Image (cartoon, rainbow over all chains, first blue to last red; front, side, top):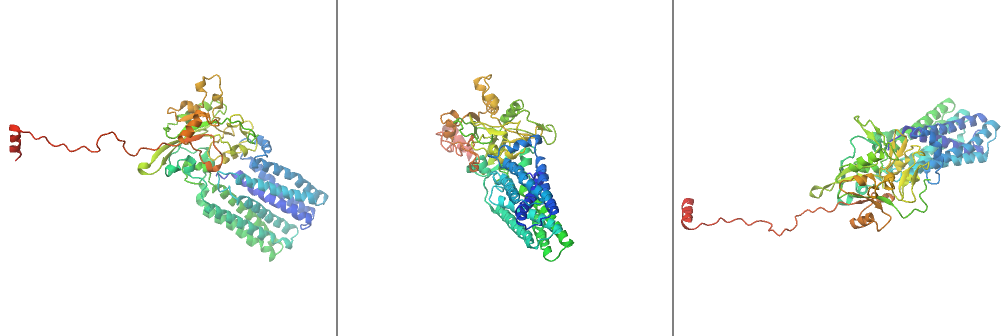
Length: 311
Length: 248
């Protein structure tokens, strides 16, 4: 599948934003986070900024952006529509939560919990867009939804740790960062292990219905140059670097942030802030590379008509 | 609405494609392009049509496959277009309601005025039936020539999709696959027509007919398998005596 930059930016940024929003919405009402307004302003601005930036970015891959509002109408059947509805609906409690915290100095429990619920629902819908696509077996499996949720939680946690280091470290929360990194890394490695070993869903034989006559191989393509289907669904470039990119995503996105997330146990002050910043930036960059791979490694069933023997 | 029709009619219009007969001439693809360049989905935009890498929207593509090995191997021409599935995920994933399946005849269409060009429907289709028109910014697909099949200004025999009308080998058939007594349904039953990628669960309406078995050995014509060697005639008399004399 073609890794569209706008979609990768969207899922990476909004994933981190919703992860952070969910953590703020759950932790703040129970007094675990600093209650001061400046912390609330910076943390919520970071979360909502990442979410909004991501949503705006996602509109750039549309052919008719001015009609994007129509995408809220088909929530009965479409996970993409549900994602849009959940994303917009989450702004309501998140806005109230933010107004209460920043302007009134009151952390509203219901608004916080509803924001967290909306954040989880939106990331769930994003993951389900991919999870529900049968023609892409590497997306249509049980590992996709846990991966999206865990990676959003991990990147949100890393950004929360940075804001906490600046405004008032909470030693009781230090363990959150390494724990969510381990969880996300485990799920990502399990996903890779699964897609590497899963048996083929469809073959050139089942796609053409000619499998009973022998091995089916493409003799002549219908056209001499690439068409939309091959550009969008037959993307090849990153696949040949997949092994190296996986190592980069693992080292950059999980390994280094894990080591850095242990820093506050031994250092404090500015070194701890710097470590938290680098961990958050690297973790997010790692998710970006992982998301690129998620697209580039996914093979679409239509490629069976263009010479691929199985997907 | 992208919900599938709650009470679909029994009528399921579609195509039956005979892989035994198709000669791979691409006439169906070309006539499809020609008709639909002036039809409801027009224009089918071409990008750099005279350049080094021409690209453009087509609803019908003809692939050619090699199947089997050695003497059992064969070449199969394979036209590919929208199968107007009974369970079309391309419709249900659409966030705007642009994609829909008609209750009255099962044809899957795109309302281009509602389409936002998110391309998700093309991801949801395993058959590559939907193509994005970069120029128009919307998705386009086979309409089963809805502007021909119901066109009462045409003579009844011309009220078939352009691909069917033009096929010089009569490899393409159009009809109601929901009616077990229709000519196309009988053809499918007789020739054991099949679904493409049935494992995806999309329940395609269009059916493909398999190539017939090839004859690998000659049939019996009544003649002996090998002619007996001719024995030279033995001449007698004077010429025979001369022949024997000169042969010594």
